[in-house]
Every structure is written in structure tokens, then in C-alpha cells.
Image (cartoon, rainbow, N blue to C red; front, side, top):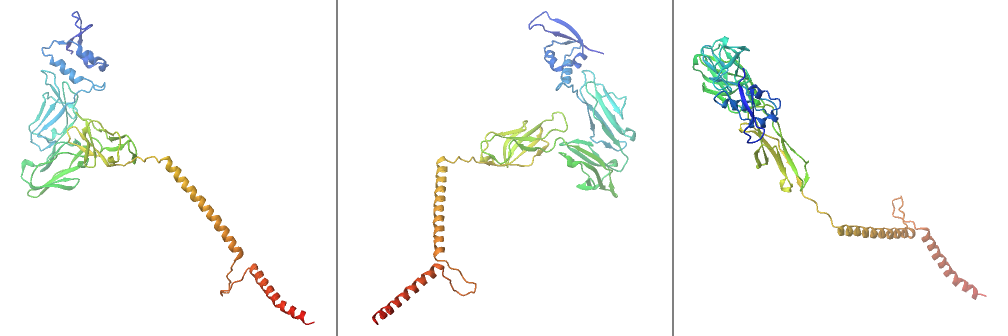
Length: 422
């Protein structure tokens, strides 16, 4: 069954003679190119057979596409009291929250995949029985089928009640150690994966305000009455909304002054939920460089030595319920080295050259002197250990010359004597 709308397409602005056409309401819901037609839709002058034109506006708001994909509203089931497990004979009410057409609040309920006779937004169980256990889903006139809610009706003396079995990171987890007929118990202990993590002198509810993946596990409780009673275990799953961010820099450290540095806080949403948007902040040590912003990048336009330090970033949900910090990133900025003057190079090489020349002259002079001394005065130590020295051949010749002179001098008087004798 189609409701008919009267659509007026204006050929020209302020033209009173416009062409009138009628389309079924499914026309708007079946647009093949919503981006192209969205502008024209808002230029339509619409009238409907219903007296209230809000019906048309409601349809538009619910079926406006995002990125070309039609994403209708999903119904949500809430519980009162807010526990997914109850004792027999207790009362529980399921409420289906979703958009309805004006004047039509009809709601379809499903139990274990089968449609029930209940058509109201509320599904009441006044005296629960084991037959009421199962998977509940609902759908309103303008929504798609809700996610399932598993309701358990359990016969026991002590029951651990939870607000849900599956959570998104950052959502609160409520726990209740519930006794049959509300019997009084004391010394109540709450356990996760077999280890007690909270105790109360008397029975009391427990709330974990912001869940994270460390809260995954099997929960149960125990309490003292006539004896120590222990509940059955309940599996709780916390889905990670986004991983811890990692801070990266566009340049490697160390870097020179004056460089442009872009810091990127890298993470992404693993799960989509209404209004899910991440906000990023950047810090150096205890100093906040930039508060929360939707941009995941921060720029240092011209790095200076004062910008050296340990940097980190933080990613948070829009409501601030979930915060995650990155590991620290060290950034070291080096000062620019001033160029060496040309005259310094000239002076340096000139001094080195003079020193080399002087060293060369000294070496040549010393070598010549050593050779001369070795030639005229060569001393060789003997192996006998005595301090005897053997003179060179030159010295021997000198001694021989002296001996010959001395002999000549001695022979000269004798020759004179011989001459006088005749």
C-alpha cells in the first residue's frame, strides 16, 4: 500500500505555472542516485493526503543516505529491570525503542526467530518460566530488526545477574549477586576467571564504569547464608572499539633545525556505533601541545633544539569515556653547523705545508749528520762483555802515520851522528 505525495518540480524560479506529478511514497525510498536527487528533493513543494506533513519529513530524515548507502535506523531492546537473567516467577519487561510512523506504534516481536502475537512496544513477562528463555528481537514500522537479546530464566539459589553479555569498550558493566526470593546473604565475593576481585560485607551491586578488553572473562559470585552458595558462571565479552594509538613522525630522529615535522597519531575504529568519532591530542612530556581535535596530525613548522623531547598522543571518544595513550616517541633536534670561512682553510693548509717542509729539511740534515758520524767514528760493542772498542781503518792509518813520523824523528839524529864520524 502506497501513500501518494504530490511533487512540484519547478521549471523556473517564481514560475506560477508548474507541472504537477504524483509519486508513491516508495519513490523516495528507492532512489538509485540519492546524491544527485537530494538537492531536488529539498526543492520539491510537497503535500500529502495526511493532514500532518511531519510524516514526510520523518521519512526524509530516516532515509537520508550516508556515502551513497541507505542506513536505516536499527531498533534497540532495553530491559527493566536491566538484567538478562532472572529467577522463575519474577517479572521482566522488554522495551523496543525505534522510530514509528505517526499514529502507528505497531511493533513486531520475535522469540527464537518466530513472530509472537505481541504488537506493542513493550513485551511484558509477569511471571517468568523456563519457556520464556530465548533470543528476543523486535522491529518497528520505520526500523530494521534489532540485535538479539538473550534472556535466561534459571532455577538456582544464587544467580549472578549482568546488564548484558556483550559490551563495547567504554560502556558500563553492572553486576548483581541475586538470591532466590531475595534471601539475605553476607560476605559476598565477585569473581572473574576464578579469582575474587571484589568483596562486600553484605550483598551489594557492583558496577564497572568503563569496560575495556581486560574485563573479558567468566564471572560468578558467592555469598554466605546457611552455607556458602556459589552462582553459575556468566561469560562477558568486551569488544575493542579501537586499538591504542601509535605516534609516528614524518622524519627520522635526529634531525636538523628548520625541518618540517608532521606527527601522526595512528589508530582506527574497529566498531561503528552511533556518534562514534575519535578525537586526538598531542603532548610533549607534561606539556599539552594541542587539545582534543578530530585531526590526527600535528605539525612543527620549523623544528628547533628546544623541540627535542619525548612526544606522545592520546585518542579519545567524543564523550571522553574511553581514552588511550600512545607509547612515547623521542625527537632530537640538532643545531645547524655554520660553514667554515675560506681564509681559515687557506691558513690551515699553509701552516700544514710549512710544518711539512721544516720536518723534511730537519730529517735530511739529521740523516746527513748521522751518515758523517758513522763514517768517521763508528763504534761496535764486543760480545765478550768488556768495554773494549775497535777503531776504524781510518784511525789505524792515523796511528801508523804517527808511528812513522816518530821513527823518522828518531832516525834523524842517528844519521847526523854517522855523518860526523868519518
